Amino acid sequence: MHRNHQFIRNLSSKYLHPISSRIEDYDVVINPGSRLFDKFMTEHGSKRFDFKKEDYSTWKSSWGKDYRLGLFLIKGMLASVLKINCFFFSGTEDMVFSFHTIQYKSLGVQPDFRHLGMAWIPERYRGKEILKAVTDYLGREEQMRSQNMLACNVHWSQNFWKQATGKSDISSCTYYISYYEMPEFQIPKIEDDNGIVVKNVNTKTVSDVLKYDRAIFPFNREIWMKSLFLEGIGRVAYDSNGDVIGIGCLSIYPSGECVISPLYANETKVAQIIFRSILEEISTMNVNIWRFQIRSNDQCRESYEWIEPFLKCPLRRSHLSNLCYSIYAPRYFFDFSKVFVNAHPTNGPC
Image (cartoon, rainbow, N blue to C red; front, side, top):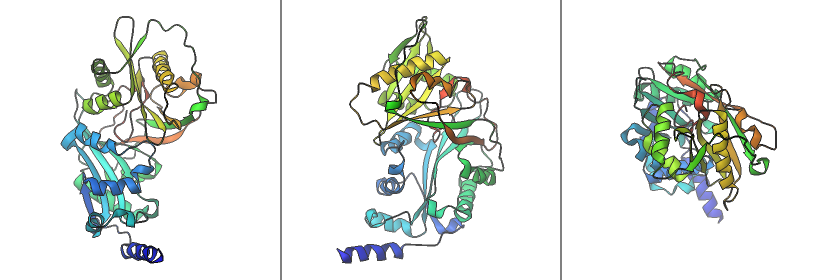
């Protein structure tokens, strides 16, 4: 046993390299195969409570050639990762950055845009050296200054965005995040539902979901949204005339994290009726539920307070990110007035 431990320590030290600010010192792999992606999951993906391995396959099949997952490895490490059992590596000594981009094609008059997400740098490597390498690469390969790019950037990545694009405006949208555990919820009675009917999303009703989504987010993501609503707990709400007035979906991850993503509605009462229907189903399920992740924003007036009747505890939230852009301010690209909870910010602004 002692010899094995010594071997692993020697192997790890052999592959430790100083971090560099030069693009030439890294191998960049786009849309990695299963073995390299498994390493990414070991080092980062599996530590995210709102991400699962299958998401990568879903995103690739949803956007095809318009989807790119990129992994930065210190030069010379790629062959080692592919040839040696990745579990010999105890930390993140060779994978130093990840990102993905999704090219969104407009379905209306808005310009196309590319969304940047999944940005991750191991804490031990965060600093000006890796940021320079990443900035240079994305500027050259992803044309961040010459094409319309958007991202929901946390505080640490906003400086990188300014260097990469020359833009520092963060006023288009501010995002917040709240976490509540299951015992903190209650199911209130909502008076006067005005004839609102909520239906489960299935292969027949999913077309209504997609049509409503296009009115709020007029860009191509039908395959992804269809998969999201059919695999999760999806709901669509209709008024007394049969018109769609709201949609909502809850995804449950292996960690026990329940993520509302998205929740769109014409008004607060509709959002509440949709969520009540989801919560009623959750309360009867025999599944591992740890907590709820609920995002809000400053562009929909009731985005934060709508959930208050469902809580036994006070409302709480913390800052998550800001919507950044490279060319066109995106405030009017989307109908934020109906975005009570945005879709996953790593995949798009709302």
